Length: 63
Length: 135
Figure 1 (cartoon, helix red, strand yellow):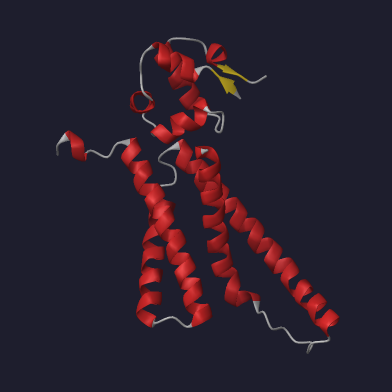
Figure 2 (cartoon, chains in turn blue, cyan; figure 1 turned 90 degrees about the vertical axis):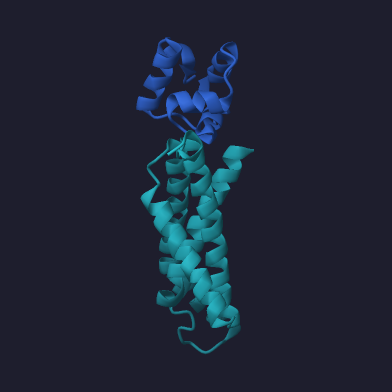
């Protein structure tokens, strides 16, 4: 699944570690999501959407 | 407790991955110990490392999504390996015995090696998933 996580993170000048801390996941999880190697669970996807104050569909794209 | 000693998700994941590496090493040494009759203290140490690593991996597998994925990859490969070995190992041995005209008896008793095979397959699956997601 494609996502804009890396772009959104860069816009806020957050490192992967910082974003991971805010989402209460590991930095490896953030890296795996950004590189498309892992699709987040629904609760995590909602946490991401709430953190960036955007709908899930604007962050993740399944096409 | 000060902040620097707090168990962050990052530290938990590093501890988990370190345990997986140690468990893999312990498994390899334990299997080699049986195959090559290594000293008892070495085999005992390897089993100890393996048990501690497995306990940690089992108890902490749900702490992070990434960890859970690695765990699932390992467990899946271990299951497939066990099923294939259980179903096809006797067949393959029979095929080999037939082709080589060897004595028709069961040389490889699955109960003796399916456990180590499962552990080895688990760690292989775990590390392959880890490396693929890191690259």
